[in-house]
Length: 126
Image 1 (tube, helix red, strand yellow):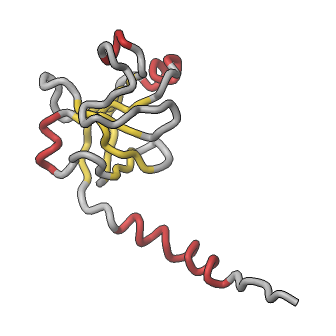
Image 2 (image 1 turned 90 degrees about the vertical axis):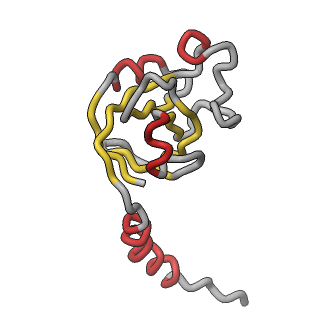
Image 3 (image 1 turned 135 degrees about the vertical axis):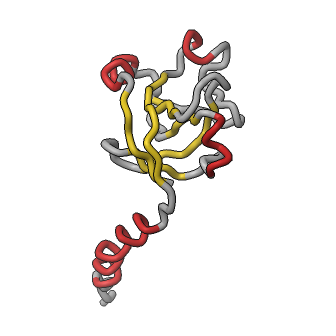
């Protein structure tokens, strides 16, 4: 007869992992957050190709950052938490040089979700 796998390691992981994950975010900043989609009129002639060469696939949790945030540690593939949005986002794209202290949340091909998001001030942690 096969022994059952003990459940206590899973319970301990659930209890202690969340505080460790939250504690690993050392920096925070208030930024302007907008949203964008994979449409040529918003991104250019290769709407699914990000500035660092990553493919943007609808459903992926990614953001673009203004270039002034990169020296602060918001570099390629940095994990970011966004106030009011669940989950972790990866920095996969860069915004035009004209933008400052700003992020753009990737919303795939959901134009309505991007419009509903609009433009707002949020705290980010990384």
